[in-house]
Length: 360
Image (cartoon, rainbow, N blue to C red):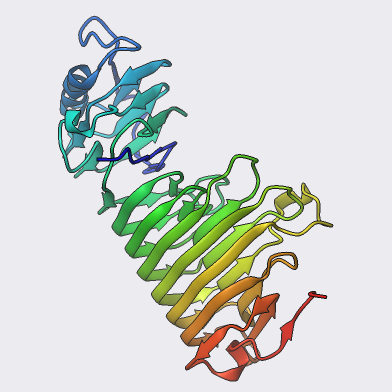
């Protein structure tokens, strides 16, 4: 069996706020303490399981700590319910085994189940890049952060292969799900997003060592009062070349979403990039299909592709969006540098009928 790479560098961030009185004691459970015996550069599978058992059983709020360092982990199942709010503070790096047959559970490496009032903090990493990982799932989560909190992606996935995200509710101040470079064969289904910045592929092309993105399906998801719906975003002005292809957004509901359908190859937050240059990410084989609901802005479809590498094989099929703002203004689409898009069952206002092109 060939080596499959799945690098879960901060794959998901749980920000489930627990209302805890200051007067309550807090149980600190350190996996490297004498009680549990975990040590850097060693296998801490058993130590972490025992530490979780005690932290979860605590009648008071608890914090399970994995200090800085690198630890080998054959698997962990953080399973509730727990008796009180619990924080898992990962300061170090947890590494999967090179041989997938060494996993404790063949179906998962790290799992969180049936837990309310959970924080996952610490700035560490779940590093599965060593392992032969065939399939991973994130499901039945509720992830919440304040609407105005910055850099609080609900779930971030990068350099990962065959991930499923299902039946999850996310409300945050950034992307509900952000999909980074090197992501392949990702399926996202039955996700409710809002508030937040939508589900985004990217941003891509910011760093010099980025890997291609392909084989993504986002299906049967609902966006409510978000700034974006489904989005692909890449940086301009970078010498890096890359690829994002075979990306499908299917059966999507938009409820008062600011930018329901967007490709932004001029993504430059804070104006910190070379605005004179063009994005060198080639976007192709992108399908927007059966997307319905309401747009909070007049421009419901905005495809702004690269002049250097225009988008190809883009499909708009069954798009039915109405403007939810005041004054009964018309709904619009804007399309730049999109080569011969396929348009089926889309009214003219949303069908890129008038396309701006910067091509010579």
